[in-house]
Image: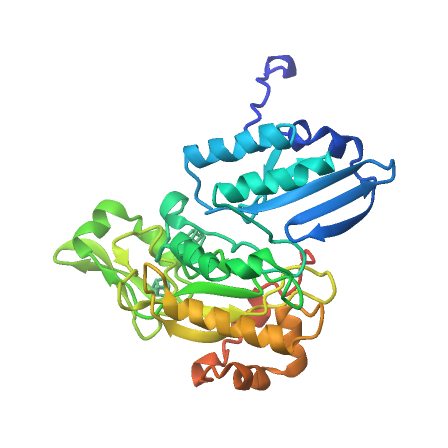
Length: 358
Ligand code: SF4
Ligand code: SF4
């Protein structure tokens, strides 16, 4: 086919963000001189040109309905020249060039029940994974954990009381999201999957399920004359990776799917090399609607961090300085044999730096 006949590609990716950017930000892109923090939730950026812009950060309930979105965007129309941005933690940011509009904007959002904060050394909104809405593996309702935890930590969102910024993450399965936090609340399955043999041949492509298991614990099998699968339960590490390609491998369980809390994850190379999170509490009841046990552990860790860390130490840096034994002493969390990572495969197979390797 001649080049002239080729159909042009249809661009279906992310649109160019510049068209949605506040004109003051567009004009000064890459030319910012410094920023200050006038109050919690508000940033003031000053450009080389002398222009300045205020950012007001607002925490939301994360999963937003159309009514709330209309409310939030009409505030943007009234006070922020019609510009609004959602951060990766689902905060809403408004951009205001007229300083006299900052306080009325804050008043308007607070009147509707939203909170302003999440900047500098605060606990910012929890990172949200919500498999029930868009993913195929969830074992719990992560948005419920996020909402109840944010309700508990609302004062820490609105103030600058922490030694440094705290990022908290969640996950609704055991294998994917939730690895990027100072503190992470992740799902933990504790039993191998139960197999609904009647459904396997209707729903699952057996070779891809077998290939999915990281410890080769799944084998094809015939059960009641039908093609199915079997699991070597001694090998199974209860990761849940077989559930997405084969929902009849039922790993989610009201009693045995638990939560675990991990501490000290860092994805960036900013001041030190990236670090893996470490398990500090496991087998925490997955207890909706308010998850009090998990919330209690997170609040306990935050209290110890607040009292003991030096200024500007992140959670992971604090623990590395005082040592993990001292961390368990301070928090009073039990240290068991299950906290010891004796899996050597990680050294060869997992990335431990953000550098690309070929
Ligand atoms: S944590 Fe797991 S189930 Fe939840 S969104 Fe991420 S990959 Fe999907
Ligand atoms: S839960 Fe994980 S380890 Fe167990 S059988 Fe499924 S894929 Fe394999």
